[in-house]
Amino acid sequence: MKTNTIRDYLTYGSGQLINLIAPLLVAPKVISVCGIENWGKIGVALSLFTLLGLFIDFGSNILGVKEVSVNKDNFHKIQDYLNTSFAIKLIFLLILVLIIICVCLMFNNIDQRLYLLGLTLLSAQFFNITWIYQGLGKFGIINKLIFFSKVIYVLLVYALVKGKDDYYLVLFILGSSNSIVYSFFFIKIYKSYRLSLLNVKADLIKKQFRNEYSVLISNFSIATYVQTPILIIQYLLGDYYAGIYKIGDMILSVFRSYLSVFFNVSFPKFCESYSKNKKEGILFLKKINTINILLLILGILIIIIGGIIIINICTINNEIYKFLGFYSGFIIVPIITALNIPFYQYLIYKNEQKILSKILSFGSLIMLFLGYFLTLFFKLQGSLIAVFLIESLITTLIILFCFKKYKINLKTFQISK
Image (cartoon, rainbow, N blue to C red):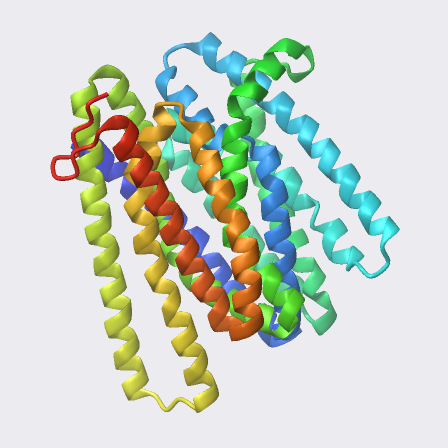
């Protein structure tokens, strides 16, 4: 199992590396051609579509992975789950598309080209079946999805974005590239499991909706406190500073991508292991998360040391130096996030989605107020302070709940229930 886990991390990690490289290749091109202000507009629109896309994801990225992982040898259970899941996704897709079209037609001050063409991001979210392959443990196929979609995306951006006003094409290209590649694999899944979305019974949809809506609230709350800062910055400070923040957020995305790899590989393995043997499952959770935090700290130290060396070698003006100080603050946040992952995974397995949704909803609500006032008074630094405080609050509440309900021994990570 250890060898397979390491192989899966390396396989899935290489795919996420491509996911990480793609925006790093696109950003300099778009910023140099379209300007930092338009880069800020793209960042704000992407944040909004990310939030909306969660309604299409619903609970599939967590509970869907769990269901597929636990029932990977039960064809009919997976078939029933996929039918119902994609029926729910289709309903949300149609509703969201209709709402966005109506809003764009009703309000003239909205960048209609950017948001209407950005609807392709929602179609890509519907066709995205990476969560199924995560549950099945087929990380090589996920790599193919990521590789081909991102290569198409980067090439088309460099080919089509030629002038300052072409910024509106970036999200359209991203959504179209993902939709084309994802839909190809979606058709394969559709045929393999003989799906029929139009024949799903209403009571099954209602049952799955009730079971997974709390996961949607949790995911939406997480995305809210992650995406809210750039929306607040754009509202209070304008597109230019939103663009500056978006560049800093890309640094944080390095660690988010790493944590995403860790979560997506370890969670189905934990579910499978714990369902067979509770002690082995807890032991796996303890070992893999210890390694995760050590690797994360090592990565942060490498970035800090490398940054100091570069600053000492290169001549940097005061304006750029000021922003470098701001960007360096982003590397603190992932350590806090990593601390709650084993507890979060355990609570999800124990179907504690409701308490998680309450904690995360509370955190996102506090972010709206705290982020607004800290940004108002302290500008960009205030937004970063808000992110740090909210991550700390959420991590603390998740761990405290685990301690209280499941009587965790912090030293041995033994759980009594």
